[in-house]
Length: 375
Image (cartoon, rainbow, N blue to C red):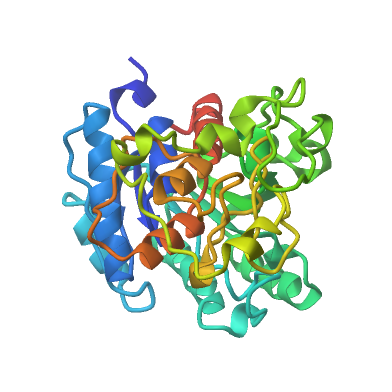
């Protein structure tokens, strides 16, 4: 029996949030053994949601955030003691998406000087201290777009690249079966003593890691005849050829589900007149606020700051928690406690990595590790 089948490779998860990236890695066959989340409410939401999902998969390991300190305060020795009771194993990985508001085009743009931007630096420091076999870092594409941010990022990577081969790629969740246009950059690192230099040198254009490509949905944003903006309340037919699973319609809760499906009837009340709401057309998402989704199109990036949750395509309300979770590719067996604050739920959901995208990256990584006889 090969090593890869004997045991699951352990993963340390940083900035775990709701656990969406963790879920994708678990679906791909890794084992998340340690988690870190500084926000107390996010930690409670994570524990409830991930535990309920694991139970549905026949996994009775209760999910909990193992460490709730800021990553700036938690020592690497402490992480090793909490995660590995018998010392570090031969192989383990690190995954994380440091808070991205300081790099986001819609955020503060403070870059690495912002409080959140500094967490990316600390994450790289932890990689060099803990020396995992591999690491994954996810962030907004703004990290690689602005000249000054890009240059500073390269200086950080230069340090990491003394010990790791690092590759990166911009991925859009829409191209992986998620009904949401969400572009993020993924960095993959493999420790140099685990990988043959020849595998790197033979790679075309210096891109050595086989980032996942889903042929079925590739270039989805341009290859389908998506629903067009129309006045609110019209009856619509799905345009021919558009996959329903990439449409917001596939995520909306039915009238029957609204009172039976967990988290389906949790949404913010609207403080705007019905007349003003009716004037917002279905598919009118280029507004600064009150963006109304189109039932037969994908959602723009689900980023729900300041309670600005997208409007339902044809009902006078915002999306519910369950609908937002579905737009992030989160299974319905992931259930959040009804008593915790709505604003925290939506913020946590919007911060997450869409689960099918996380799984696609994790599966490619696992295949690469096996193919190159690393595990």
